[in-house]
Image (tube, rainbow, N blue to C red; front, top):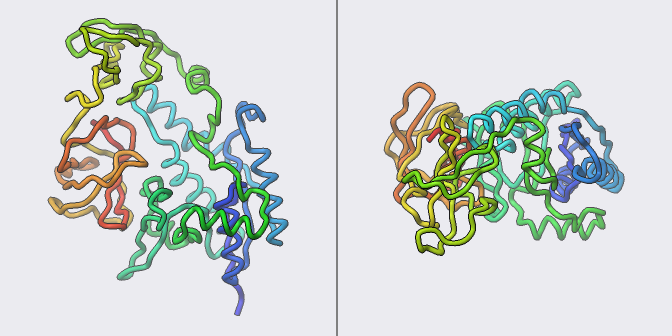
Length: 359
């Protein structure tokens, strides 16, 4: 019987490397694919893509599997980065990893793999796929500290049916041990963090190259001016660092937090204290909804939601569906609900889908 052909997205990191190894051990015909998604200002100072590619090639050599590189930078710029800039310009805080997964890793990559005759694609994400009752479910990764289903909630049935997550049942420590036992050169390689196309470069410096910025007033909710911001696009709801208004105001020594952006007035609104009422919301509205099964959840059932990646599950109900939006009501007020970020809905360990926070 002919072995099934799996193309693994190999980033040069330890997770995708171990994923490729496990698939080969399971008898698949494995090919590695390195995706280059960014070219602007691609220098060794801030971008590690050259070293990542060398690491991926070294691992492929040890595993004795073929590997190729493909350049998706044009598609990335069109499908991901342009939307990233539009969101920031509108005063929202987008999550490009969510879009990258939906548009590049599980669309452009999947389409490319199909042209090469692959039966499946695979990645090193900490998530799982299960076929249940005639449909495919997206499950949390076994390692709760590394679960990445939050970034994958926009995947649909067709994408999940063609995808394998070989390390989803493992803990990170087990993945590193496998890599160490195999003497892979990236066994101890540090996990990548932050936005992939920005790397370690200063965020404000990067964003100012693409968007005009207009300084303005920093005010309290009462309208008292307490400082000047550099441009609303540089700030996000709940931000504490980098406000430039240290010290006390009105006799309080509590830190300042961003609670709102008034786009029409170019005003950044701040409050003092982590638990200020202006930073807490009992509900939110979400748009651009996508559901893994293709069907929206039941109204008024109790689910769990995350409004940011490393947040604990927050009990909620969903309702108010109208056209492209819904309302999510929480059992407890949520801190720093941020327009542009994703709210992702779960039923136990099953990721149902979600949407983009509107307000």
